[in-house]
Image (tube, rainbow, N blue to C red; front, side):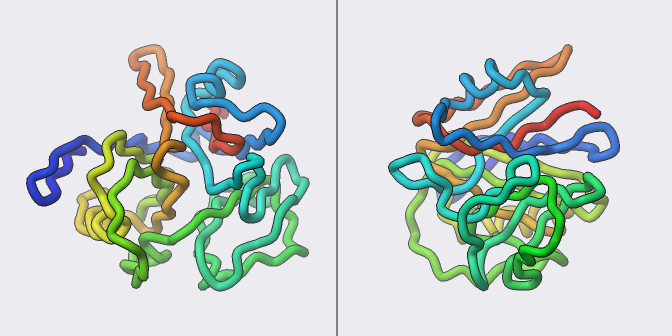
Length: 212
């Protein structure tokens, strides 16, 4: 998807996934973080994208549920959460609208911030700086499809990104910002296409797409 922001031009890579044919899961490994290309070589997915934020010790800064095991503390009143629920279905939740319930049996979950579009396609009221950076997004459209998006060039502020997604023809119902900058990375491998935006730095947390 071509971008044009105040005479700056770039492309936004958009991967749209049918949840009937593919499933998404969380992969988290503090001990062996890797660049996106290294994660792809290790887990051999159909696709993957970098996840949420982490500290200098490669520990996620928010809740992660990896194969049913929870670690970290949930964001409270802000941010969003990628969920694989007990039935194995993908959800993208706003933690402001639907706070995390520790009693809920979730298979997978990962949190990040901010929500760019609240569920229902509502543009978030973002109180953020005007820094331009590489960007990564996970979203859901009005048909329930999952979208993974990455921009390899530092052309967008978060407000510009949110407005771009709102005004696009992607018919997005919800969109969550992931860790951008040097963490931004996306990978796709199919019989007809191979595509990589590699992260500059090793990341401990990714979203992995596999065929059902």
